[in-house]
Image (cartoon, rainbow, N blue to C red; front, side, top):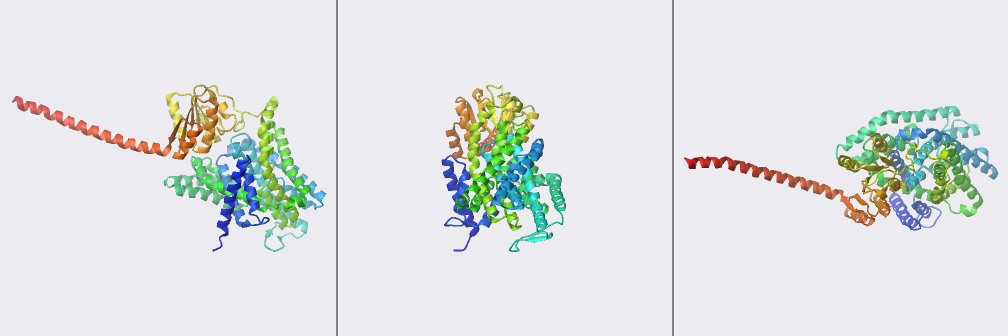
Length: 593
């Protein structure tokens, strides 16, 4: 049998992740826990099959690119500008505090200062994948937390990129040999600028060039390419175009401008978010995005050595406290300083209280430059694994404490109503109205019909760009995911007459329908589906009427053909009658003669 490490790695990683992720879900844990354990089981420290670590990391990188591209599609520069101050100041302060804590621990262990700096810096950088995946699972991407968290992550990513450029120069200064530094195997070489200011200027210049290219060229070229492909009518070509843009921009950003794959893909998504094709692009990348994102967590599990838990339990515990408590406390303190509510501060703190992909990169570079020992790298990996494992449990605590935080909120620190995606919208005054969930291609047509018929309605929409457009047209809209706690209450579903679910995802629609039916059993619920299985599923959830898209298309085509045939038959009959009426007078005239 030929060796197929790539296929074996994909099959083992995704297959085992599915089994253990399902088991974790049955135990009311996040599926992420199952993915991490799957990585441990196929890693080099456990007996049995060992997957190719290098291949797994590269596959995981694809997941990171597609995930960040998809998240970028849901945001625009306008969403991030209002939070630029808290993101910039907050991220720098939080990273400085946690780096100092890591340096203190390193000095207690007996490590040199340079090792402590690298060690502490690695403990201060949250995992972009974990944060965004968790916000998605908790349906918080449309709340006030998401723009702040994403802005925070962008600043952290830029800081790490800057650190990756400066660390070789820093190591060269310490060694007294500026120029080229190689690792023990001469496998990695780092070209070091002669001065640290030169490295700083070079990094900022490259990022500025990348930003300018994306802002000026990307804003024109990327939407034009996708619009051109969309007009070909080929779904296959459109899907390839979306993937080419996401992967191509990410690779180009890393190759030409030394910007991370993740950051490049995120900016590509933000550029495309201003296009009308953004929603379709997000749907086309969703399956691949989810599959490869799972491999990221599997790769983290493969790096973890469980034996460190009983070899260095005290140090591992100290690292976990710095990562979880240190990061959460620093983030929450900054958020409160900027007069955000306790709920927002607590959510941001919990979201950013873990480390991930950039910490691995920093640790690996630190070892190659002899700034960090392998023992330090093992502690960082242990901190990453355990913090990602603990993070879902912290969100359970967050969910239980949220009502108490809301009840004890002083008037001066309440969440601002002008924040993007306000999490506590006021209850609508409408009654006997329609609640329209989703204002995409289907929802917008339904809204036009409701407006024309004079039916009062409001819209629940997740995309902030669409929300702003609806508000500009004086249409009542609630920003957020309809299944998010509190949104159906704000839409006054208990007093509504119709609920129209125009979203294409049957699982989200089913969850929404169950909540709405429980709140108002007399509510008439109308949903869309794409298959008989989806129709059966939504009926079980409580939908009153389900429109199957393909069936309605077929019915529309058939009715058009039958209508044409009826019109043609009517015209033929009219012509025959007209001809008969013209000949009858002639016959009477001949008889009279």
